[in-house]
Every structure is written in C-alpha cells, then in structure tokens.
Length: 343
Image (tube, rainbow, N blue to C red; front, side, top):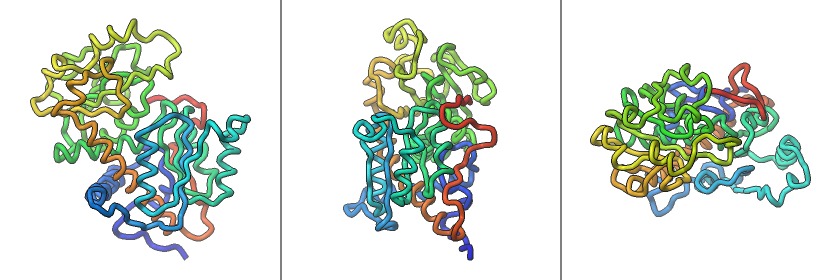
C-alpha cells in the first residue's frame, strides 16, 4: 500500500532522482532551500550529525576531478548517517575499458541507496537514472547541468539579500561550456530573478537569446546596477579551438576587478562556483574582498546537498513497494549520454 507523502517534505514522489533543475517547480526548489536552512544551523553546531539514514549507502562516482562538490557530497552523506564509498576512477575497471553502464550496473548490484555522479558527457545522469534501483544525483554532466550548484547559489543569494524575486543577477564568463550557467538560468529564473549574461560572442551558445536573459558583450554595460554577479571559470579543458586571443586580454575585457565592479549596485555581491582562476576571470582583491560570498557558497553547498539527499531518500520510502526506483527527471526529447544540450 502506498504511503502518503510526509507533510514536512512536499516533494513530488516522481522526483526519485535529481538530474536537472529544469523539470522542478518553484515550490519544489523553495522547499529544498527552506530545508537546507536547517542544515546550515546544524553544520555550525559541535555535533554536526543527524543520522536519519544510518545503515544506508552512498556511492560517489566522479569521472571528472572535483574538490568542492565531491567533498561536500561526502560530508553531507556522512552527516546524515550514510556509509560513503567514493570510487577511484583512475584505479577502477573503467581503465580497462568498462562502459559507464556496466560500471553502474556493477555498483547497482551492491544495493546502494544513492549514487552521486559526475561525468564529462552531457546527459550521463539522465542515461543512468532509470537504469538504477536507487536515487541518483547529478553532480555535473558535461555542459548540461549542475543542479545542486544552482540550488546552493540560490540559497546563498537568498540568505544574503532576503529574496530572489526582482533581483538583477549577472552571470559572466564562459557561458558556452558552463553547466552552472545553464542550471542557474533555470533555477534563478523560476524564482523570479532578472538575469543577464555577459560574455564575448565566442563564449555564448547558439540560441541563447531564447533563454529569456539579457545578453551583453560589455562588462561596463552588463553590470549596471546589478545586485549579484556570478563569475564563471574559463573551462579550457572543454575548449577545442581559439575562443579568445589570450588570458591577459580576456581579463582586460571580462575579468572582474574593482573598475568593472564600479557600475554595479553599491551592495552588489559576488559569487563564483570554483575553482577560481585568479587574474583570469576574477581579481584576488574581489575574490577575497568584502563583497565576496565565495566561501559562504562552499558552506551552503553541504547544507543543500544534505537537503537533496534527505528529500530523495525520504520520497523513495514513500513510494509503493515494487515501483521502479529511479525514473530520472529528463524532459521529453532531451538526449542521453553524449548528446548535445543547449539552453
């Protein structure tokens, strides 16, 4: 017999995995942010554990390097009581030619409760989610999405500004290769923010005008009276051609420094998903200055990931016995692993 959803977690039972922001409703996003608020307070206590899921298992499967995301997911799971297993891809069977699907099926046979996946192929999370008998969280797939980063950015802004609706938020830098930009466009847009994208034309995806954001090719114009700036890293590992002449020239025109920050609102705040390339997309004086919320983002990341893990595992506990455990949340028509996705 199907259990009713717990009143403290008003999430759709069909959300058994989190692969993208786009399918979520504003109410679901807000509920996740509200729950994460509680975990910020918990993380500041001496005893940081709330072992809701003792005896359950979380597998972290990272095909790309990561410091902040991987460690925060590990800490989030541990604080909720899960046993954490992080797979060393460099010393796994992947090096022997094992496919992503076979790796996932092997791990699935070990009966984990949740898998956290980061992969270099867009759509990898959507490809795996319906093939697993457990929850899956997308920790970043190619240039597609990074849903928990968008959630923690939204939480960071909401805590600092008291709201998201009506804020002027600029996303600056390598929009073309950024899954963070894509997830933030969906997340912050759903919550009522007014969005601007600032980048050279070579670093903007085709069809970006359809995103609903204002497009600028000048920092001086794009940063006029903005309330929040999200600076993006140049993702050189995804670049196969010449997108700008040099890092020095890029910083001259698009690197955030005191002069470029001047047209923004006096109380404008600065975020960066990390890792930062100091002196390329952001000056150290800004990254370490009083307007920076970069360290706060890291703290909030643990809280958001605790909220997501709790939501997914709790909703699975309220699913009917024998139901397909992981259905994913890919919008109709979206391509699977290796497919291209655009804003």
